[in-house]
Length: 412
Image (cartoon, rainbow, N blue to C red; front, side):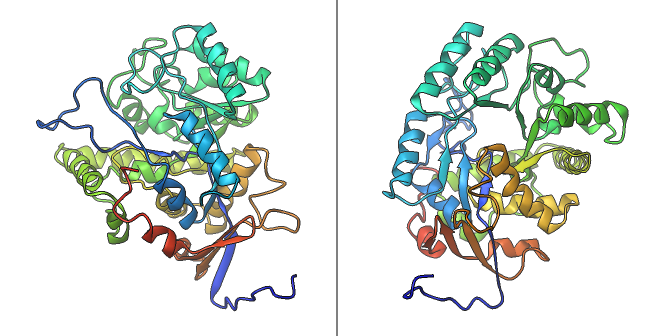
């Protein structure tokens, strides 16, 4: 230790590894989409980059590594990664996921449509050369196109994850996908009655079909066995699912102060719309409880579960804060606090192939440390009490990071 090193007396505090967010975007989806009548007109949902505020939010919350898990402005993400690595701006280290691999009929006009398998192969090759290190398939992609993308990525030594719909989880496992996002209750369509191949069912058909499934039943057990046997990881994004349920906690006053007025208005408008739909709250709570049960059963069977914020949806899952909330929801699902922390740290590091450097506190690893008041290994909510964040041995003041972006989140 250097002779002039500053020694901190941190009695009553806990240090744990920097969080590794495995579904963490640099964009915001819940603003500037509505017209005067309250509808979303053509061309559809527009996504706002938040490359200034998001890195600070992540770092202030103890997230020292992220995978972007789908990109709208990939060159922005790549350049931002390089600036952070060069020490020109604060933020987590970034594993850049290439632009979404999407199919026809997408709601988001900023996403490229993969026209055929060869188009997917060219796209994967191009973005691998540009510096992307992973790929994400999206809801409307068809099986032949997804299979081509997976094959091309694997040829390059890279991995593919997916927020799927037109392709169900069993078919995605069969063609070699490496990771599946959000949990099956929100994305797996294998149980939808009369489903057409390579077609995403409308509305919440997938979720409705999964709510009816018995986690201890053979169909779900069979899916879990296949996931484990093929070493397909699942990314938990419980906070973004919870954010749309009106009876669950609203954004804290601290988080609301960070949002731009337009972003906060959009978020509250979304929540109000859901609350006005008869029976919606009960259905969404049933889906969340089912997802809790699946993730617990998956891990108990030997599955590799990771965690991320997915700051999208109605805008209520803020970067960093949603990673912290995800820890609490994993504990609500039945995991011990230490298990939840491991899922959100070392498990992500292992999937990225970086567990020799990050994900746990050991001699020789990078000094990525989160110092909180209290003890999250016994009270997981203490993970919110972040007082110092170390990344690569450099200390950051969370309060100063957050003060620098008040009123800006959602617009920059």
